[in-house]
Length: 108
Image: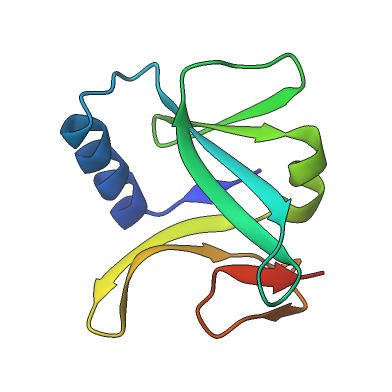
């Protein structure tokens, strides 16, 4: 399961509104190879639910995760920070054994 913080939910609503997206555009979270630690997070909106997707819902927001990525993301929380030390979505992933300094890549 993937959880979403209240701040991340607020930011998702703002982004949907700015891009004129509907509630049928769900949050897709996936893991791809790359980055300085070996794996990178990818976060997009998607209005297509594939047969192989796992669908989670937290506080009214649906999250789509392909089965391969789910192995790396189980138990992850999606956060949003807008503080002085950085702005953007952050993944709090209990499975990651190391992360890079910018927080965009990780290793298991």
